[in-house]
Length: 77
Figure 1 (cartoon, rainbow, N blue to C red):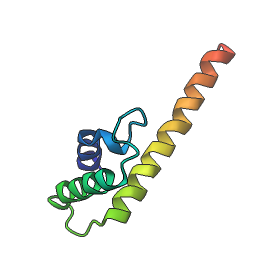
Figure 2 (cartoon, rainbow, N blue to C red):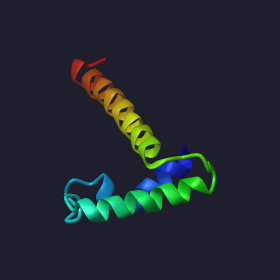
Figure 3 (cartoon, rainbow, N blue to C red):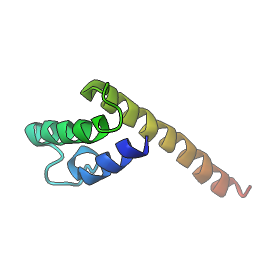
Figure 4 (cartoon, helix red, strand yellow):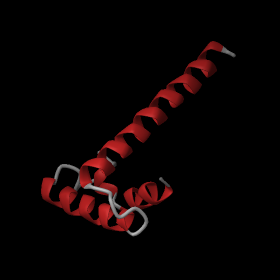
């Protein structure tokens, strides 16, 4: 999983909505292919779809936990 996160972090256009290339569909597709190539060095059976789903799951879980922390700060707990 660390390999996926590190590879995804190198491709800013995949996750940073403020990036000028975020809305460039072709550049994002090329970036995703580079991510998959890096992850395949460790897990040869990985596909583009699997990488995308896994990263979306990680992002969703982070957002849930972040909301919990922010909620506990507001409540004074």
